Image (cartoon, rainbow over all chains, first blue to last red; front, side, top):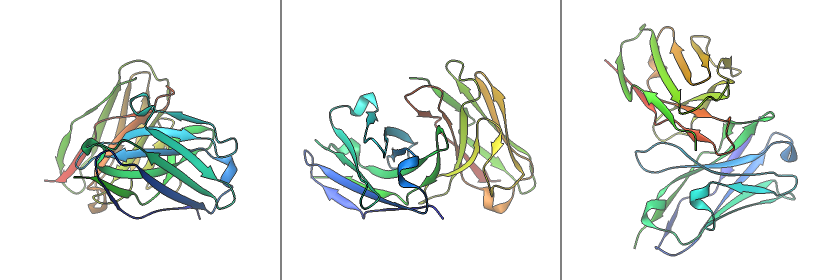
Length: 119
Length: 107
C-alpha cells in the first residue's frame, strides 16, 4: 500500500531554513508527481508546489518563489522540501501529497510535519 | 489564481441528516474539482475527484456533482465518522487552490 512517511517536527528561528523529508513506498516512485501542501494552525490548506520525480522539474506557488526548493533522491525514494528565510507566518504543518493518476489532485498524504518558527 | 469559495463555513447537523456543501469557482474549471475530508490532527483524505468520481474505499453516502463554476459535496445520511472539515480543490489551473473549508459539527 502507498505510504508517505515524513520527518519529525522542527523548531526554527526566524531567518533560518528548514528541510522536510517524505519517504515514499508502495508504488512506482517515478510515475507520480509529488506535491507539498501546508496548513497554518487553525487555517486552511495552501498548495506550495510540485516536483516531477523522474526529471526533478519543479514548479512553485508564486508566493513562495525564491524561498522554496523541492528535490528528490531516486535512490532512496525520498522527497525533500526546503524553505528558507523563515518567518513566523511559516509556522504550519507541512504535508507531502502524492498526485493522482494523470491529474493534480492528491490521493495519498504524508502524516504531516509541524514546523514552528519562533525566536 | 482561481478562488474557491466554500459555503457554509460551519454546518451543524444530526446523525442521519442529508448534508450539502457548496464550492464556487471564480472562473470556469470544467469538472476539475476534488473534495477532501480532514479530521483534527490528521492529513486530509481524498473523497471525490473529477467532480463526481468516488475514490476507492469511500462510502457511497458521499457524492459530488457540478461543473463549470458550481460544485456540491453531498452526504446522504450523516454518520458519526463524518464529523470533520471538508475542503474542495480545483486543478484546472496550474496554480492549485483550495476552498476555505466547511466544518461539519454535531447538532
